[in-house]
Amino acid sequence: MSARTGLIIILAFTIFRIVTLHFDTTDLFVDEAQYWFWSQNLDFGYYSKPPMIAWVLRIFNEIAGSSDIYWLRLPGPLFHMATALMLMKMAKRFIGPEIEGWVGATYITLPAVALSSVFFSTDVILLFFIAVALAAYFELTQRRSIGLALLMGLGVGLAFLTKYAVLFLVPGGAIAMLLIPAARISVRDFIIAVVTSAIVAFPNLWWNLQNNNTTVRHTQDIAHWSDLGINLRGGLEFFSAQFGVVGPIVFFAMLWAVWNMIRGHSEPREKMLVWLSIPVVLLITLQATVAKAYANWGVTAYVAGIVLAVWLLHRLWPKGLRTSLTINGVACLLFPFAAIFSHQLVLPNGKEVMERYLGRAEVSRAAADLAAQAGAGIIVTDNRDMVADLFHTLRATDYKIYARPPADLPDSYYEQEFALPADTGGQVLFLTVKPLSCADETPEMLKSWQPEKGNYRGDTIYAYKVGAACLMQP
Image (tube, rainbow, N blue to C red; front, side, top):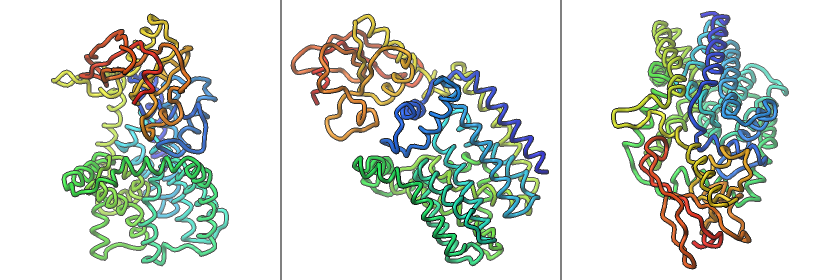
């Protein structure tokens, strides 16, 4: 495949995703709504993530003059296009022009890329900055350059400001530099890159110090490091899921490359790519075995991993490269239609395939109607999913929205920064999935209902008119 053909495929898939995104019928997922809310309250850090995704969304919101779902998800396909182009450049300079087009086409059709082109996440931005950093690093293995060292440091620093998962690349990269002479860069360039990345990352590190290490503590909490054990099934499920994240043939090719390296059949460049990809998968597999891990936690492996897989397939199994592109490409063409026909795709048990992306805005609008009937200008909830959507769905209204104050340490950004103020008086609307009782009054239940579809299917939602003081009680 020529570079020109690769560019055409990248552009075609990007345009397809931008167009189909316009017809998407899903609601914002809780994380997407939270990222948007962060973008309305700019800072150097947030409860669960560094600040980059909020900054990116703010830029797109300002350019578009809109916070509609389409504009919040548009950065996804655009960032992936940029990453695919960066990977093409990296592959051409590090390996050769023969795989340039294949690398770009393979990346843009990855299942994980298709998913995150519809539902925006931090991984989208993270992959781009890692690609920038690795492209500069591979160049530095060939020649000394202050400019490239600065670029490498900038890429790592910006990746850190996007998601701490960039640190998963450090062990493999360090081992590569120790074991493979060709993987080493000059001491001067290494120092420049490290200092640059530290300077770029410093605002978030300082923010954490000023906010009780909030993001770091949350990262530890979701990793369940305080509850370690042995769960072989969890590790196996994570590892198996990687065949779906990047496609079965691509992941198989990465494992094949490891086998070649063990047998001593790899050249230095291939070993470098192995060390910058596979250790990430192994680390997260270990994490999944002793605690918990989600399938997407290993995405940092696939910047170098895609180049590795394509290079191996191009040399040893060209038919597999074409078959992989066909399988992943067809899946990518079909996936956006799941978001377009989200209400029509229903499983035999009545659940929608896209269930967790549906029904959220409907509950927020119902809460607004009930608040209007009750004459309450304040809506409070103890549910993170609900408060996230309330802020976005009701953004053009005059309602004041708050999280219920936590009894102990805050469990979300909303509890940390937007808890109901202690001096609030009068009646408020309280939205919850748990019955409410108060010591000093009997809350007036305005409505309880069980949504038949969507994210809250099977839950009972309660709406109360209650004094604000009641919600201050633990």
